[in-house]
Amino acid sequence: MQAYSYDMRDPVYEIAGMSISIHIITVENIYGLRPESVTLHHSHNRWTLDCSKLAWAGRQRSAEGWFSLVAERNGKGQIEIRMEAEAQHKIKSIKLMIRGLEPLTVFDYNFRTELSVDLGEDKLQVPGQVFFYPYNALKYTNNLKAPILFTRDKSSSRLTGFRSDDSKVRGKRFVVAPELSGAFKDKYTVELIHEANATEFDKRITIPSWIIQEGADPDAFYEDYLTFAESENGIGLVPWEKRTDFPAWLKDVALSLTIHGMHWSGYIFNKYEQMLDIIQYAAERIDGKHILVYLPGWEGRYYWQYGDYRPEPMLGGEEGFLRLCEETRKLGVHLMPMFGANCVNMWFHNFSEYGPNSFMKSPARTRYHIPEPDWDLSRGHDNGWQAFVNTGAPSWRKELVGQITELADKYPFDSVFLDLVHHWVNDPDHDVFEGMRLLKNDINTKRPDLLVVGENWYDGLLSIFPLFQVRPFLQQPAWVGRYARTVAHLLEAEPSRGSTGVHERGFAPYSRRPISKEYIPTVSFVDGTLEHAKEEIDRVIQDAHQYKKQFLKP
Image (cartoon, rainbow, N blue to C red; front, side):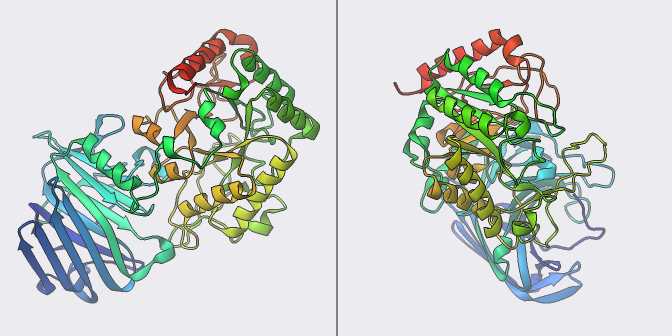
């Protein structure tokens, strides 16, 4: 996080007991309000602020434009703030700053822990923390599952809740930081930033409501948001019991098996024949209809083969994969190969047919790329062959849907896992979130019988996918079970030696997760797991029986 080296002289206005300032950020600069052009009115529980001219460069310069704010106190004592603005250039975002606050921590609702915001990330960063919604790949520990943040006053322990009631999945940033200069030096500021979809940048912007509540009860505040998200004005969340967008058999699944195929380097953990042995072992101990089998690295070199999917000759080829699918189906087991939703090998021959017009990119058209993982262990993180593409782009979506459905027509699997669906960027050409919705819909239009599963989640994705693979160290709130189910992430260790298989984590301590309604018991397999960890495998299968008894309808 950075700061300017001068006092921006942002005018401050008292609204509903808060000291607020405004920034209007266009594609080319940052603007504030010209104080002599502002009128502020207060009547009962309503405040209005109107500004007819903008300022920039610490109020050294003026610019044409206007800004309007309406704040109202609702029946719950919450402050609802709506804003509009117009400028001479296209507007990216509006920042609402609540200033002059006593020292704060951030209350993590999901972990129920306090987070300090006093330190910057390094010596070149100013103190403070930025929290991102829906996702920032380089700051994933500061990602929010919903556009909600809580702060706690260090002296009074009083919680304040901040949230955005938005009908769309659009970028939000929440900032908590001490000020470094000006009248509020050493006081804390909370910044609430709404960013328009880059596909819709315009000289005029209307901001969905920000809701602020001092003395908030976090459970009630979150519940208010979920109620909104389920409403006709929300983002389309549908409770699990009312969902009709997935095959009915998913509600019978009580056990998930992660069976690793081929590592990026070419190391083989399990061939198709060995995968079948594992499945048969499990199906002898619990009815096959309760088993979902996830296959990372089924198509060959993990990630390297992304974008050109087919059975891998060294794992058993077409004949071996066909037998795996057919025998699995006879057992009633559900088979789920893995596909990259938005990541491909751009060195493959077919990339030129769909790739150049499909790159994920920032609003300023910086190509979205993550120098992770360090696949070849060169310690150089040079994975430029790996491209991120947007499922909102018709050419890539058509290509991926075609590959998935053609394979499903040829090989009888009934589920697909889509990797990296949670990756998001404010792409100026195609809405990334809506691209995921279109991808899922296009797959099911061609093959309505296929279960489509995603990796990780934020609130909007719960309206698209019914099942997610989730990381163990990103604690899952119980409310996710209101809309979807989860299974263990492939980076979790298998029980024989702690291997994470195809995943770049390498080795990790093995731990069996406790049974809960939203989490389907999961166990992973690499080479030797079945032979050396049968006792623990059987325990997980017993957990599956308990899950079936406790949470599934007879």
